[in-house]
Length: 437
Image (cartoon, rainbow, N blue to C red):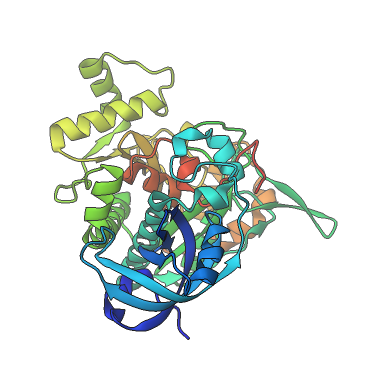
């Protein structure tokens, strides 16, 4: 028999059916017993009167424990006096399908009663909370919309290898592995393979998949294993076209998410939809630094990149001046960017960061597609061109001008839902001190 989900119970009133779910609550009173079952899509009340005919059922209920799973067969009745959806299940049969220990290691109804690290130790229980389930339902919806945008706009989906010989980001830490006696590493980025696809004649490509960063970072927005959405576009004339694509892509995903889940998101997470009606403002890094100094009297230690406080203030500026939750910062110096970013006539990169609600969520750029200049830029970055000869070969037989971007899904979800730590926005988090569960 096909599982009946509780969200569809109104279609089964006055019918004999079987239901299965977790035991959410038990009330054992003098004359009646109540069980609240949940299955992730909703809840239903099971009512068992205490009498001779129900003696076997009463005994089963008396020995149940919370969070056990239960199969109940009986009639679903319309009961206006029942507060929970105005219906109740009157059972004729009841069978526990698994038994939970009587005391849970964490309180799954109130996350504040346990430390975050303890909840992460018991993530499978922590995820039973309704807000967590809603969050990952929304992530599914959002990621589907992002993929749908790509497909509608003629992107080809690729699946790049996650075991690599070379590294995509100069100077970044990698997880080294033994590959049949040869040194290899887990991929930090599909960047090289996106560019390989462009060199192969794929006009537009995307990938959504894991990348690995061996950075010993203990911040609230870093992880060592990340689900990334990456895109690359051929035949561009400017990195502005890359920004145009990403802006349209994000607006499409956000609009679709709020269309499907907006009311629930605002009710449970108390957050507002980002403003997708306005253009994302675009300013250069030089302009950003001047705004920070003149308007907010803040001068960061770095002149070639942005610090966390600067990102927060620039998002505040975008909200105040443009009513935008996003802001593009462009034209970073070569010293702060990888070797494969194209340089302009002033020696700055044709690149950008996209900031969202105080956090950088994207680095994007026009790539350098001319092999001789790529080699020069590698040498400037103290990278031996021979160490990446396989990559340089992509550009030896013609390669269109191109550019692209990458976005960490958990980080943007974290900011969409105003969650203060990426550990809460990741199904199972991996960081420098966490390898379990």
